[in-house]
Image (spheres, rainbow, N blue to C red):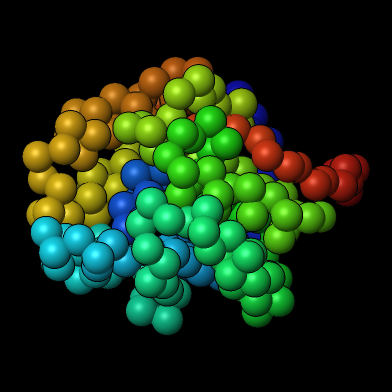
Length: 215
C-alpha cells in the first residue's frame, strides 16, 4: 500500500495549553524532528493556577523528549479560559509567527473542540494562515464529534516517545487521557482506520495543494 506523501519545509504547531501539542500530535512530531524546520508555540503557561507551578518545566521536559530544542519552543502567558478576551492579541501573535516562520503546514486544535481557549486558537489560526494548509488535532478530553479525515502514519517508536514525553507531566499523572494504554490505543485505532499499524488523526481545516506528475 502506498501513502500519499506530504511535506513541509517549515511546520508550525500551535497549542493553547502545555500538553495540547503533545497529546494531539506528539508521535507525528517525534517522527518529524530533524526532517523539517519545526516550531511549537503554546499560548498559555497556566501559571495563574498555583497547583500548576511545575507545569512550565514539565512542558519543556516533554518537548525535549520529543526531540525539540529550546529555540524551537515558545510558551506564552495568556490567561487560561480567557482566550476569547485576548482574541486580537492572539491573532497578532500568529501573524508574527507566520512572518517569522512562513510555515507550509500549521497544526492546531480541531474545530470540534469545545474548550473556549482551543476554539479561539483554531478560529484565529484559520484567519491568520489563509493560503496555508491547516490541520486540526484532537485533544481527547474536550473534543466531541471529532473524526480524522487525514491520517498520518507514525512509527511505533514515535508512539512510545509520545508516551514518554507525556510522562514528564507529573502534575497530570492521574488524568485518564495521559494513560499509556489510552495513548497507544488511540494510535492503534487511527492506524486501523488507515490500515496501518499506527497513525495520528487530524481533521482538515484547509488543504492547499499542487498536483505534480511523477517524473
